[in-house]
Image (cartoon, rainbow, N blue to C red):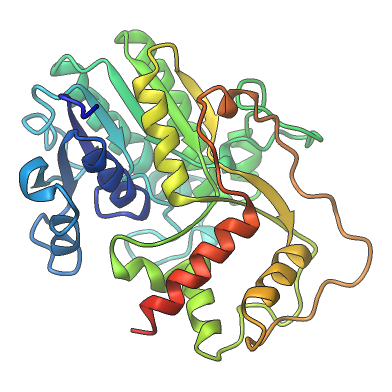
Length: 332
């Protein structure tokens, strides 16, 4: 049954936000999507072409760094999705986060994410919105020392350790989540936070095909080498981006859902990941595998994620769907 509710998706042109927009329209929601520039010719037209957009979607300009930008947009909505807290790897001057000291990293990397999230939450609270969902990252779930299997409730990254390691980009998510949870508790909001890592799958906005791991796959299909010459002793966690959107909406539609949820299917060592890719792209230039005893992949307790009842694609299915889609999309 189609929903009669109205939702706001902050960051509707991002990878996650665009898929939330697509899912919300398919489910019959009225969607108010925000972009920094609602007339962006590289983004807005692709959102406006989604099925149902003509009747159900309105796009609005809003910048989370400006207090009050969301005040009018969230009036009368039933829920707010915050999908605009993208990782920040450099300051306004272009200086990389890893080259900053703690004071600059705090001011230019951490606090813009924290303050931006709180600006949206304040607008939502003033409008009487009680359901909020945030896209964060697994970077906030790395306890020190590490554990064999981590869960969303007990296991947090330590911001002081992240600062000491100059991981200000990751610390931004940790500090933001604590601030958002405190705000939600104070204002009687039902807050759900999703924690993804690598997200793959068909893109709503073609620009997303050129970025990150998906961009690397597109280049490999075009005959270029991967970003690695030899694979490091590392693992990667991933999810199909449409499955992540389904998790968000399952939490929205379940009045008992709240708190943090992993937004990954599972984690694979890079050796196994690229071996699977070689099956799908036998002509592509593959990196040399890591030699030696591989470290075990990240272990997760998925009890909370699975309580939402969403069937997720496994990693071979995620990779196959992504590679097949990129083949059809071609090289821009």
